Image (cartoon, rainbow, N blue to C red; front, side, top):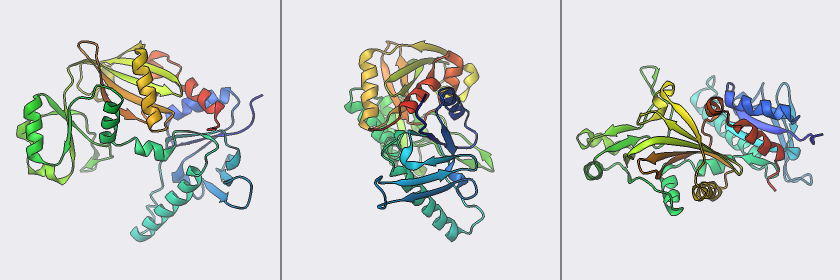
Amino acid sequence: MTEQRPVLVATEAHDQTADMVITELNQRDVPVMRFNPADIGEGLTVSARFGTCPAPVAGQARTPSRTANLEHLRAVYWRRPVWPHFEHLNDADRRLATAQTRYGLGGILYALDGPLWVNQPQREAAADYKPTQLAVAQRLGLTVPPTLVTNDQNQAREFITAHGRVITKTLRWTPYERDGVPVTSWAEPVTADEIDDSIRVVPHLFQAQVDKVADLRVLIVGEKVFAVRIDSGLLDWRKDYSALSYTVVDLPDPLKRTLLAYLGHFSLVSGSFDLALDTEGGYHWLELNPTGQWGWLEENTGLPMAAAFAELLTRGDAR
């Protein structure tokens, strides 16, 4: 019989990927409490005590259907939680409520060092900066395409002229709308003639285009490495999922060890890597997404990704 210590799953309301992991946990008789920080109030109550008991943090988190003792958690799966916006409040009250929730609820959760975190949010945040990712990848010996981050139009033009085929992409995906219509930014080709003085407003990322034959999405869960080759003929395969074909591949052992070391650098236990495969079979670093999507890959390949997460969370215990 599995010891009845719960797993906390923090994610948004409609997250089919989290559902897959929760199903696997249920099959292992592991109790689960799913919650979303946005539900604070009617849908989520938290209480924590400090300095009054043997455990550094003691208390409870409660939803309308579940209660979890914070000092007896097995693991925390920090999937894709959403923080509350308090839209019913005025601007001043909204800022105050948002800060109190992030530093109150967030502070309580981040103080938990007994359970295994997949992944600890502050460590995810540290790993989420593309310039930092590029530098760490190069230090670890991965092949990094020549890249420039700048808001200097002359530097941008010189870089594009020197490297010929260059793409630009956002430094971080951010929800964005034009005239009320959601707009998504893809990796796009850019020419020197397109660069003007408007570049000065914010830093932009420019990168020499890899002469690739396919992309790779590599999911690591604990020590398990799942690699899928994605063939599309597209510069950015995310533009058209209907055009994709998938092949399960086995990465060279040195590359596996390097990607595991990459996660270790940031003290992460899971992450989704994007690599490009060139015409000579070389691997080129693109980026790491600590909470990257993988559910559709399991559906298309049969790889036991959800089971790997469930096994990791079931073991739990950071120590």
